[in-house]
Every structure is written in C-alpha cells, then in structure tokens.
Image 1: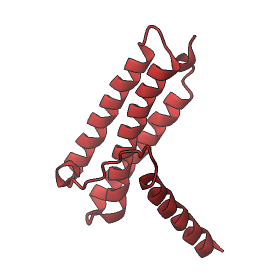
Image 2 (image 1 turned 135 degrees about the horizontal axis):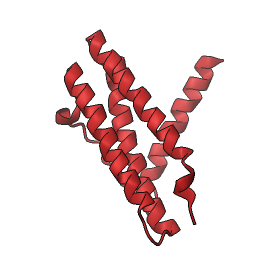
Image 3 (image 1 turned 90 degrees about the horizontal axis):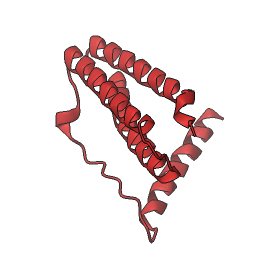
Image 4 (image 1 turned 180 degrees about the vertical axis):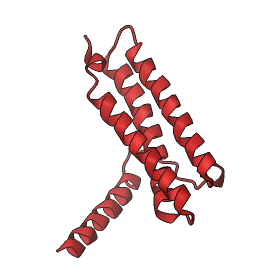
Length: 131
C-alpha cells in the first residue's frame, strides 16, 4: 500500500510539473543547479543556516513594517519569504540525505530544525495579522 501511495504521489508531481509548462501563463521556475550555494563543511552549513535565517527574519520584519497593508503587498512579501525558505530547506534536506560526513548531515539536520521551528513561529505570530 505504501509503494502504491509513493507511486501515485510521484505521478501527481510529474503531471503537475508537466501541466505548468502547458499553461498560457506559465510559472517561471529556475531550478538550475549551482554548486557555489551548496555548503560542504560543518562550518559552511552552520554559516549557511544562520545567515539565511537572519535574511528571512529581515524579510519577515519588512512584512510586519508595511504601513498600509494590502493583500497584494502582503502576499508579495510572503511569497518571497516562502520561496527563499524553500530554497534553504531543500539545500539542507539534500545535505541530510547525501553528505558523506555524519557531522555535516547532523549540522544540516540542526539547520532544518531551526528553519522549520522559525517558520512555525511566524505562522502562529498574531502580530502578522494586525489590521
């Protein structure tokens, strides 16, 4: 049953990607591999996690600081925030699965925990929904 679910999920993802390319208004997705953004040592992973969390916090604060909040300007900020977070998440997830050194995998796991905890905290932040 689990294999069937995995197979169906894989098909769903594949068809979703294919259908995006057939749209009249396609979504641009730049998924080029860049070796220069993949941290390879424990120190690099630690720095990568910390600096990106700091950037995400600055972007989140920019959302909170919008004087005249509208749906459009709020969603634009959130979209950028989630896209950046997804990039960091996938990089760290990749490292937890394929890094040859256990120390790098562990540090990437710690970074993932910090990132997901941070996103959970902002998702429950009541000051974000002020009128």
